[in-house]
Length: 185
Figure 1 (tube, rainbow, N blue to C red):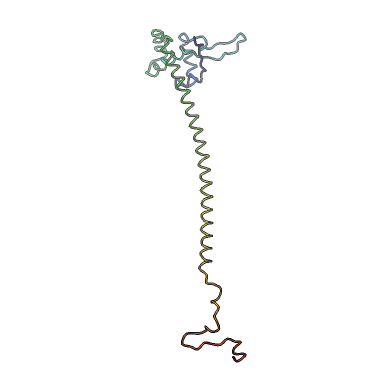
Figure 2 (figure 1 turned 90 degrees about the vertical axis):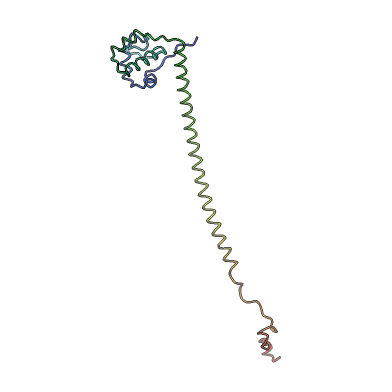
């Protein structure tokens, strides 16, 4: 048989969607329907003990929440709880266990989502860095391409060398080179 599960006040209050002081008040008002561990108690030295709620206490408190939510007074709720005496039957325990399992599954899913969010944030940072590097590389490549194009468009250094016999147009007589004029040839 499974050991008896106990729950802390904060966990019980969250599951019932009530404030912790309200749970403390209900533990006093409906004490006769709850286990001894759910009631205010002290140790031998008079030091207060922590309250712990059993699965059966959760069933009682859940029913109390339903009754109080429908407008019943504390006295009416206490009377109804005494009349109904919800038993901690196996079906109720299965419901509580399923509720706990679901809560744990949701917590695990939330943790997985937080982890995925961190991974996505890291990947977005990497993508931004790579985009910056790509932009820088693209602008540098464009600049180099423009420089290369301007080098190929410049005219060659000076006109092609003219042959001394091929100076001038076709209708003009060929001009003589400087050495021919100097030597008279």
